Image (cartoon, rainbow, N blue to C red; front, side, top):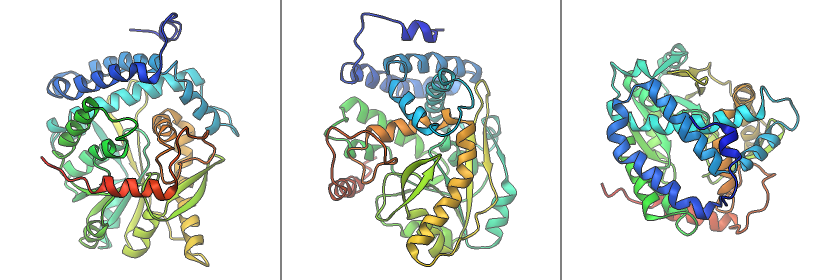
Length: 364
């Protein structure tokens, strides 16, 4: 196995994002094309070892996670780290690689095998919510292997819907700055794997009528509180950092009357299974205005989220890093203290780009 000092200490190699993009794209293509046929046959213990090596290589390519370290420092500016920064950064890259490998196993999962991959705590909260007859919103963050909620609940027999952006839409959003033919092929392959899940996918950039319909039919809707799209925004403090968050989850909650269940996915380093924790529903907080209600109810979710984030920052750092890197094309940056982007779209320009990307049509 390649160790951290070996990777970080290699000299004489200039590692720039543009120089290494071809390698990253080629590696992604290999993982999602021939890898998708091989990975379901690989023992999970071996998958962990492969993810460790791949994560260490990715961390080396990122200059030992220099940008990620800045995000970690900003997140814990007001409190102590739960463990060493080096360990957190290492585990963040390894976990991200492991989570990518999990996507390759989607076609091999089923009702009889899903229990070998995930365990679900708190199903009673979901069942009680559905007993009300108004549907259930499983409110997640881009924390840990959050995508595993889809196969877990779908294969357990719930009518599962997911409000999100199909992976190929990212190729449209980043067409001018990031997209290459190889990366686009990888995104298309990931989308093909996601469509094999027992889940109805709802494009977050289009009309939300299907989301309301599934809740009216007393089904489960999964969505993230920290996505980059939306028309209305509110603010929240996440561990002391001012964050811009879409009001979309709050609007769905208020208009549908569905129960909102904070849900998190965790996996300790070395563990084979992910643990999905469905918490008790949030209580609606009334305010003097819609703006105040948006702020107060988003704060209610953040209060549930922060303890998980404090204990497992490695589960969130890859997403924080991604949002930092795309801040120039975001309608609103996730965190307000990001350094200025080299090329910053206005909120109106960014919204138009998302609108156009949302018009993408699946050709498969």
